Structure formats: structure tokens, C-alpha cells
Image (tube, rainbow, N blue to C red):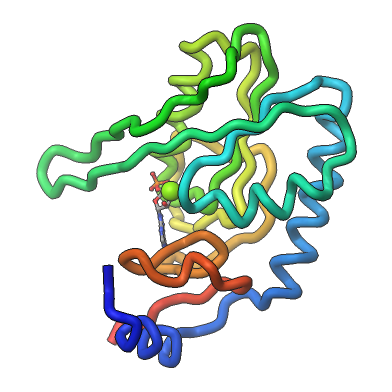
Length: 182
Ligand code: IMP
Ligand code: MG
């Protein structure tokens, strides 16, 4: 966690990447794409806590077809030497057997998190696992998973806002910002 004053200083010096209006329009477009593909599938939508919450909340109110909603919580530990490991804090409670699942997260970065989530949900019995992200980071490398639905592309920088945090701060912003390197 960081102090409020530090959070204010980070925001003041950050670069605005996508305005709240741009985010809003992109999420509406994704909601239409999801509706076209999944409206007859009675899908289970799964919000990845905590970052996926604003995206999931905005999407949910724009989907006018029957669906179930649940959440999951994973943490990814980035270890300097031995790669990264995912720890499951909360698994979905809802039975996934035979269901079409749509995972909602804030950002697809290297893709390890979303790939591991998809593998786990399929192991739990999901018939199909779709993924949707508010932001897809242009990292210039192949990712282990492509999101089926992407609201916005973002540069390969450290981002915050719209669910993404800087050491706990600024998940609540309606726009997407990038930290200044200096
Ligand atoms: P991945 O496994 O590299 O795709 O990382 C995905 C997760 O890391 C996301 O769900 C975020 O929680 C976090 N993350 C990745 N990039 C950023 C960023 O630029 N800002 C904040 N969080 C990020
Ligand atoms: Mg996350």
C-alpha cells in the first residue's frame, strides 16, 4: 500500500492512455460482441478479483440475457529466478460442469494468469472457457493465451486505473493511465 499523498503524486505525473469516455465506449462495444456470441449459452461470468471488478460491473449492466455471475481470486507471485506461480485465494463456488464460462479481468499482460485460470476452470469441468479483458498489453511477444474479447490495447508500460492498481492505489479511476518511468 502507498500513502494517499504518494498516490496523488503518481497520478499527477502519469500519462493518460485512454480517457473514461474511450474506456466506456470500448466496454459497450465488447458488451455487444459478447451478446452476439453468448446470448443463447446461459454462460457463467467470472470476475477475477480485484482488478476485474470495474470491467465486470460495467459489462454486467449491458448484457440483457440470462447468465450466472461468480468470482475468483488469484495472486501471481513474480519470482526473480524461478518464474512465477499462481496461488488460488478463492475458487468459484458455482458448479461449472458443462457450462460455458466467460472470465473477466482487467488486463492481459504476459498472459500467465489468464492461461492458468482457463486451465483450472476447464479442469473443474467447464465445457468452454472464453476470456474478456479491459486491456491487452502490446508486449511484442507471443502470449500463452489470446483474449476472446478485448476492449482496448495498451502500451507496454506500468498501467493503473479501471481496476489496475499501483501498489493498492487507483483501481477506482474510470480512465487508464501509465506511470512515468522517472
Ligand atoms: P499476466 O499474468 O502477466 O498476464 O498478469 C496479469 C495480472 O497482472 C493482471 O490481472 C493484473 O493484476 C496484473 N498486471 C499486469 N500488468 C499490470 C499493469 O500494468 N498494472 C497493474 N497491474 C498489472
Ligand atoms: Mg489481476
